[in-house]
Amino acid sequence: MPARSRRQKRLAKKNGKPRRNKLYILLFVILLIPLVFIFSTKYWNKHEKLSIAVARESGDVSVLVFDPIGKKIVSVLIPADMQIKAARQFGSWKVKSLRELGENEGIGGKLVAESVLYYFKFPVIVWADEPAIGFSRSGFFQISKAVFSPYQTNLGFGDRIRLGLFSLNMGNLDREDINIVDYFSVKKTRLIDGGEGYLLTGKLPNSLYAIFSDPQISKSQVSVKIINASERRELALSTGEALEVLGAKIAAVNNEDPIDIDCEVSGQDKALIKKISKLFDCDEYIKDIGSFDIQIKLGEEFAKRF
Image 1: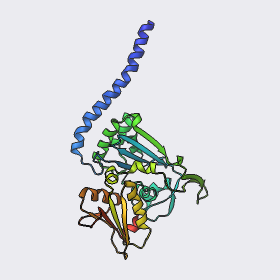
Image 2: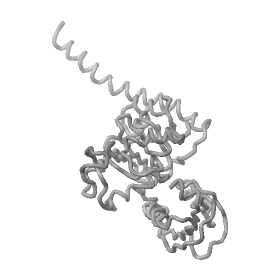
Image 3: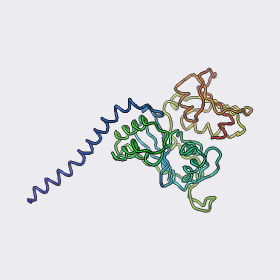
Image 4: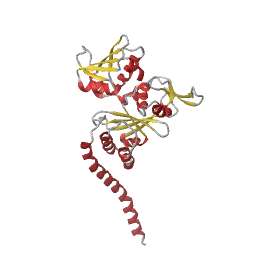
C-alpha cells in the first residue's frame, strides 16, 4: 500500500473519533430533552447550586457542586480515612464507615449527606452512590451511566437528566477537583482506632466555603433568627454555622424550654423558606416574624437527628 494512502487512512481514523463523540452527544441531547418534560425533578431547578454527597466504592466521599451561575462543576474529595463526627449523635467515625452505618441504622446513604452537613457545614441535601460521580466527569459514557444506571440515591430521574445535560455542556476547564487534605486545617495523625488517618484541626478557609454559598441569600443579606427549644444548647450554633455558609446572617439566637417538635422554618418569602427547609428537612410556615427574613425553630426531635 502506498505511504500516502496509509497516511490518509490514519488521518481519517483520527478525525473520525471526535466526530463520533459529537454525534453521540447530539443523540444523547435529542433523547433527553423530551424526558425532562416527562419526569419531574425533586431537587434541582438548574438555576441554583446543587450539592451531592457521593459515597465512593473506595470509601471516599466526593461532594459535587453544580453551579449554573458560575458555569462550573466542583468536586471536593473527603478521604475515606478521615475521622469526623457523624450526624444523629452517632459519635466519631471514619468517612468510609458512614455508608454502612447508615444501612445498619435503616437510613442508607442519607446519613452520608447529613454528616457532611453536620460536620463540615456544607449545605448538602442530596446523596448518591458511586455511579453518580459520572456527573462530574467529561466522558460521555460516564455521564450516561450516571443518568441511566441503577444505584441508590434520593435524586429524581428528572434531576439526573438535568444534571447530565448540564455536565455535557461543561468543558474540562469548567471542572475543578479539590482534595480537602490539601488545607492546613486538616492533618494526618493517629486516630482513636489506632490507625492513621486525617482530622480536621481548625476551621476550613472561606475560599472553600464560598464554593457552597448561595448568591441570592448572600447578596440579599438574609437575616435569620434561631430559636433553640432543645436541651442541646450548642444546636443553635451548629445550625447557624451551616446557614452562614449559605450566606445568611444570624441576627438573633433565643433559647427556650425544650419542646417535642422537629424543626420549623417561618417567614414571608415562600421560595426562601422552601430553600432553608429543604436543607434541614423542616416544616414550612408562611407568617409574619417581625424584622427577620427567616425564623427557624429547633426542637427535641431535630436535636436527635442533627
